[in-house]
Image (cartoon, rainbow, N blue to C red; front, side):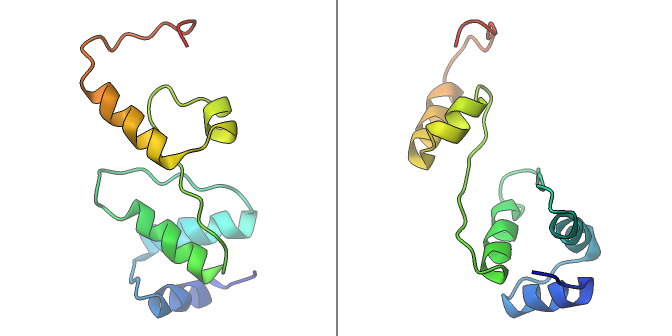
Length: 105
């Protein structure tokens, strides 16, 4: 879909998501350039909500990937399981030894 920046802003508003250019411009450029967009930030700042709104605007399914240390392309592409990812993250929080050898996994 080809949106202007103004049209994308209006689409976000229709989804009840009001944002500034600091969010809108990178989303617009990612769409225009057909490139992925990495959204980083602290928990609860709205990263997932951006993806949900964008998937609604584009009328496409949202596939959520929870990233964590140790997630490689094989796990991300071929073993995708959101619940399993969350369990892994919870299990790793309690580990004392955080040193990982690149050959250990």
